[in-house]
Image: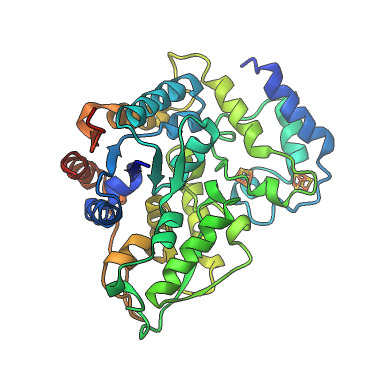
Length: 251
Length: 121
Ligand code: SF4
Ligand code: SF4
């Protein structure tokens, strides 16, 4: 079985470091891992350009086949949902795979002394994927963090505000949605597993981390504020994306 | 704008069946901003049309379908409207969408794409 990995546009633009961390983690288990940096084309589909989307997705499918990948592991739920709907190759959620493989020993329970209780922003494209919801909670708990659920989580999750390209077509409404989302949570600390969701939660006034920041980064302590996100700075985001591409090319 | 029969049928289904129970309205800031209830919104679409910004403001998240007793697919109807609005390939329905198409062109370029670890055959 040859595995492949794809981070997706938002994670590549937000954190080349985490792209490198994931590749190293997966290579430990799958030394012949193939890595792809590409876009699934979902934004085109969302704005209504279905033909242009199909063209972009076909080029991604070619890349997956060219790399000889049997199963593509994906970090982005938007990509995952799009690939599931298209059904052109076998794909899996990175989070489910990580829960299956387990975290490196050094990370287990590293946050057991932290008083932070995380709320979880579940990604809306995979609201019907209970396996992903469970895997994400398992990983957060393995790190030693406590979590608190709300009425609007799992299959009842709400969009972070950026869905359907609302962040581009109607930024004030996207901000209202993000702010509502932040207020829905019962704790001030929010973990997401989508880089766009993290950026949205910060836009909405929340303190938010990506799950990979919790896994590979410092332990978050009560009182800590979250780092800024590159996704709010277009030039940094594109520079990051280029760095991610270089990391992928050398992987 | 002449909408496709598919879009009109989807809108009609919602206009005819929505009971205005308000379940979908509770947490959707988009619906809260643009309508009193989906029945009225889709009736308005069918009679006088909607401003372009309306279908483009739905987050296509599907939460309404999860909570709707009739599982009405509001997001799918807005997406169908968008596809109709994009039929004229030369002109984008909203000027701010230009950043999406530019973003997509860059995303697809070689500058930002790569494969490593191919099977050596
Ligand atoms: S799909 Fe659109 S209408 Fe339905 S809950 Fe999401 S934003 Fe609201
Ligand atoms: S939940 Fe369904 S029936 Fe109730 S108001 Fe919304 S669309 Fe209409």
